[in-house]
Length: 539
Image (cartoon, rainbow, N blue to C red):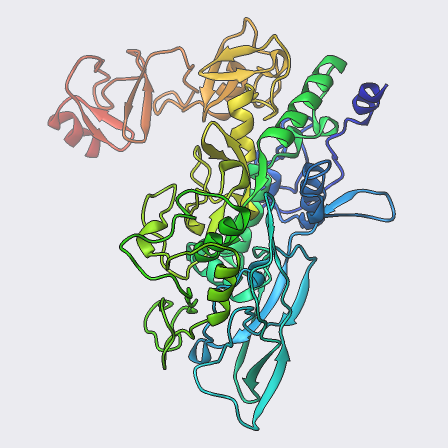
């Protein structure tokens, strides 16, 4: 009964985006008109993402459905009107001191607690549960304003640990400190906004999701490309049989149980304490080599362009704090001793990226994937799909056989994908042609939808086209007779000019001598057998 309901619900939403202008074709497109199964515009052949369509609500519904019945339901909210799950994408405005007054931020486990929140706007001071935090100048005088800092214990999927033994409840910020606000379409859901900002700074500039920027457009396009809604929702597919719907539901259940995950942004230095609390062992919990003394671990995150006592691109330091450096934390040391873990200060070479194998900079955040295990970490810019090498949008990943995939390429690794409709194929019968897979009914002309089984076709831009449509839309014209050149006919091409390989077309413009197999001279569309014929024609 449930499968019959899914079959009845099938629709491609032809009303959505109708008439929207194409950002790629401009005036050449009459407006978006969805092809009834190809998921492209009938007018210009471009996809929905290439058209001026506001898709925020639709994308949030799609990702909301992806996270249904998973451990990530904290990232979605049910609409009261129709009960539809909506993804809370953590669009946020962050207000921080400008780089000239950057704060020293100590990586505390409390400040890195995962905080799944809806879109919000707030002035965020540097949060820490391990030590006091001060801006570049000492603002302890009367001209400062106190800002409360929210601190929560770190939550881990495998174990729960509360590590900070003392809390700085108030952070002094001077009243005349210049502040800067930036709105992000998405930011990693961490409580310490300095860590979130540093994570975004470590992404390529053209991929940073600042609202209204090139990076925001990139994120929107990758959201549509990496997470096709027709890979998870039978209602978005074209004419699935009840058996295919059942197979698709089993496929979706499998990847939700075995592969789907969301990256976790943490400071590697904090993960040492987390693993100590969980009683784990491994590369992150091993501590530093070289006989370093057990004691406090102190690092700082420097915003780009400045930092307390630092220079260049986000200066960092580690060790006991002194003037102009990171403040030492007896609280952290006490917490570590209380946990019974005589940790040594983690050295930089202990932390390396699983993707590029390069070391992690001390104080920079890393991305962890629970399904991969917390002994692996990635630079923010290295958390990419192993197939397309694109950033995993909103850190949504699929883990399979030791590799990270985006949703699209995870699907491709599990099922054949139809080159016609872009859907995964759940039928046992399908066609393979031109190195691609096709539903039997979808191997048809890209222009007129004529089924090509037993028909002659031409591949044009990796799309099959029947002979009549090829002749009308793609065939080159003979420079002599001005007729279209049949795809199976022999022809001669010279630069941008083409001729039928026949005596009546490929001939001297002066004396009409057939030039097939002969030397010739070409002046634009005119052919000559000799200099004399060329001179006579010019006269």
